[in-house]
Image (cartoon, rainbow, N blue to C red):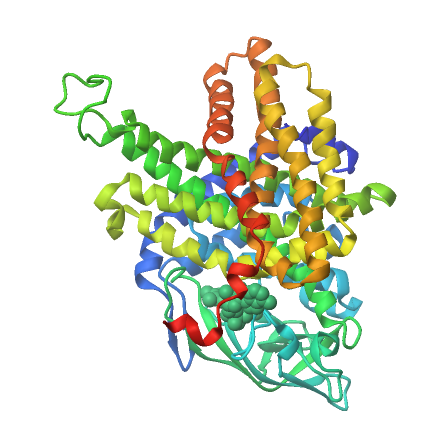
Length: 580
Ligand SMILES: Cc1cc2nc3c(=O)[nH]c(=O)nc-3n(C[C@H](O)[C@H](O)[C@H](O)COP(=O)(O)OP(=O)(O)OC[C@H]3O[C@@H](n4cnc5c(N)ncnc54)[C@H](O)[C@@H]3O)c2cc1C
């Protein structure tokens, strides 16, 4: 569907041949199944432990990380000039999905390094790149992103961490950062913190934030981890899920750091990190849907309960397998539709990221705009939908889903954070509707709806696609109309944007998924018409799409109605009267 072969040729990634990608997927799958999945539940039960000496990760995490580094996985998509293998980002996304499905908490350690690396690649000085990039790419050191402070997370404009110039050109960083994932751990001998802080006299708000690289240990003359820097982990959080990943309070007590990018432009530079991390977080939704689906499907084919409403399907047994029941099928198909639809959308976005990295001119610009438009949808919709899918997975197991042994409740607990970090769903929704769409006078949306419109037009005469195309065409038009109405209302009352935003984001997510499902039907139908031998696979694609269009896509109507209802009923109630 994504025509990967052509895509890799277009971006000059001649090494990314189908054979090469198959080999990477097979080897990556082996590592995930044999090394990461077995320490997923034990890692959850054991969790991380803090002491004065540092943070200990669960049994097996450190060894798994060593194997990951020895296998050359961290360097796969890094630039060759810094010791990487130069493969495109989209291939790394496939690996990230498998790692995340096998063991999300573990995957966050290399995941954060990836963002730190991207930031230094784009904004670091040659010296910073020489010192830190090579180590991050080899996996010898890991990275973090230090944004959040006790008083602020969504609103970074009110952060207070200070950066004061030292005589040698470095800065003394002082402040407390909280909730820092992988801030301290025992897997590597150095951790590279990417930190937001304020210079003396910097303007208030987001315009006065600068970005710094602050290593846990100062690099020595040989570039190895040397003397300890004045940064330490004060404690770790006790939390709902991802127990295997350390969530740290980090104290910077005049720690030595170096400025990345221009003064007061820290937030702009940090967006590189955040965009990488946001696509990474969307994968958490996909991983939750896929992992919980695999568990639920196996269980539903095995567990016996009651008889099918249309007569026994397992007459020799005392009851039928629960997969015969329509409601169990509803849950399984919802999981399947979310997992495969999200995968199509995320992998498409990864191709756009490839084009941004390797493309040129207009193609590069268009890809950048497309990625900017899709990112809040990926981050918020795929995690909301993935969390729903994880809950269905638990439900299919009945009471056993609630019991730790089966692993389903862990997926629910681990996935819940995806709706919060990297910008909550509410913040992503404001970004989509406010910053990306209304502030571009609708241009970014039109860009996407034009693409959908072209697809619909090109397939108008296709009988097999007809029911899909008709619905998609209607919604694609309605999407623009809704946006226009919200935009008009917002001119009179800005609260209209905030009131509409999450429903608008979910509406957008469902329409996007419909577009990707329609494309999958097209390819599947062509394969079936051409007499493929993989009839089961392609028939299931068409049938899952049918389920998506019949049973999930109608949610758009409710979202459209709620958007149309405006802000009045939310804003009318007096703050004091909420409590009554
Ligand atoms: C396990 C874990 C790991 C994390 N890892 C990291 C990390 O590695 N690095 C890092 O820097 N941070 C990290 N975070 C922090 C995380 O990114 C923040 O918690 C998150 O961005 C939300 O910020 P907050 O908690 O301050 O909530 P707040 O900003 O206080 O928001 C509270 C609520 O208000 C809503 N809200 C706020 N403003 C608006 C608005 N304008 N309109 C509508 N709604 C609004 C939010 O959506 C939310 O529901 C992590 C957090 C956790 C729990």
